[in-house]
Structures are given as structure tokens and as C-alpha cells.
Length: 231
Image 1 (cartoon, rainbow, N blue to C red):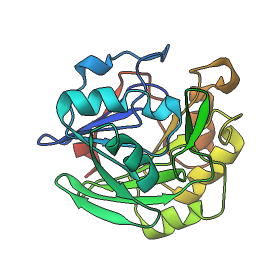
Image 2: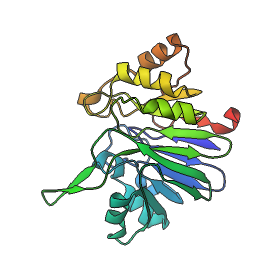
Image 3: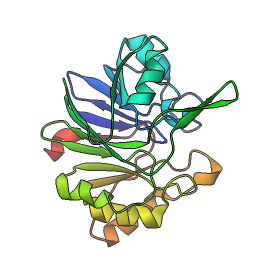
Image 4: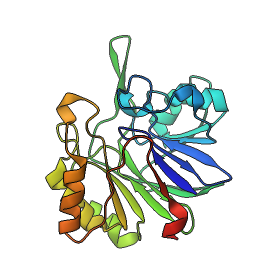
């Protein structure tokens, strides 16, 4: 069972029997080391509707006949494109073949521009992914807010993926506090260095985590974590 970081906020998980990807953005991503045409999955999980999180969702889902899971308005958007979808909402959980997922609040927006018009795609979310016995938390794009404490209170998170890029999400200072609240075994910074406005030093952030008594890994695109060693 393996988690692979593919750049920006894109994460690929292979459980051995099932495969899924979170927020696929490979085409047009200058840091991507994988091609959307090569991705094989059963499910596509989406935190929100911005183009740098759903950019390759349609292509990957259509090629694999995979199911897209997201907030209901976002799922409806892809359903209208003829794709298999499951719409959910904040606080809702769902048992899938690989485990259980739950959508949690995030403070961010969610829309996409089509033909010069902004389409509302529901609210932004984070996702708790329970693989039994491994628990992952993908925060999506978010500002710091106090309800992030509840993630750590309610779940023993093994890997937390938290944005640190600033400008569009929380920056390193707020992300450090969020990481302390969540208290994951490993915190992985995401959503940074893809574009100039979100340039940050991932290694420096991990050093600050360790100074705070937390473990972290600044994964480079293509790097993996063996989840079996965390169980």
C-alpha cells in the first residue's frame, strides 16, 4: 500500500487492490512527473472545483471508467459530462471498496470558468480517508480555521497533507499551527512552488515541524510513502 505525491496537491494511492487519485492536476503543471494518460485508477476524489485541482479529472475518469467523488454540485458538473459520479456534502461519509471517506469543511472557494462565465461548484472541502488501519487527511485548499482542531480530536491521522503556499491558501506559519492541531504521524506540505505566487521552502517547513515535535516529509513529485510501515 503506497501513497505517491505527483506535484501541487495531487496524490495517488495504490492499496494493492484499488487505486485512487486526489485532485488530479498534471497537464499544465510544470512540476508534474507523471502524465494523465498513464494514470490508472478506480476512483477520483476531488476537494473543490478550481482548475488546479480538477484539471485532469475528466480525462482520467473517462479513460478508466472511474467514479468521481466530490461535493454534490461538483459531482453534478461531471455527471453532465457523462461520467460516473457520487455527490456528497460536508460531514457526510461513504464506504467505498478501499475504505471509508468523509468530507470535512475547508475555508476556500470552488468554481471554474467556462466560456467566460464562472460556474459555482459547491463548497470547498477536505477529505478524511480511512484505509483500515491507515488514516489520511487531505486538507484541500484552505485557510487556517479553528475547526481543524476537530480533525486531530476525532481521528488519529497517519498522514496529513496541508497546503503551505500562502496567497491562495494558508502559508507556512498558519500551516504549522494547523499541523500541531491535527497532530498527524507525518505531515506532508502540498500546494506550493507550482507557480511564483506560492513559492515556499518545503524543507524549511519540515524543519519547523520537527522543532515543534512533529514529523514531516517534503515529498518531491514522484516520491512515495510506504503506508504499510505506518500500520
